[in-house]
Length: 133
Image (cartoon, rainbow, N blue to C red):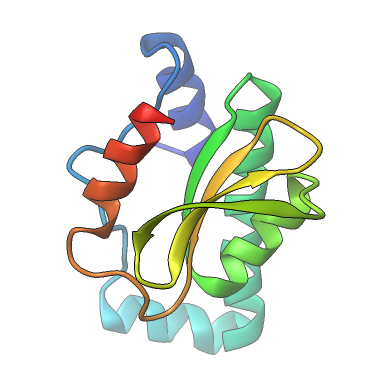
């Protein structure tokens, strides 16, 4: 199912929170990833994935969602930019180096996890904190 169609279905089936509980990890087989990178290039492939997640976040925001858990440093950056985040307040720590943050101008809260930050329970803890925010 295409990503935007999945979001549309989720928006109409669940009120307030789209949850992948337990968190779902989406990836491709190594040979599939190598084929895509060979065809489009490493950088272009990565940028398209980042743009997809930014567009999904924008669509969710347009439908009233105000809390986001985002993984990946570059993805976090483009999602925050797309959502219009210019500055934020640091909130409670989810894992060392990864706090919840709240936008200073609009009602948005984000967990922006990059690289090797966070442990195996990060997403479960972030969702728990998410529910109490």
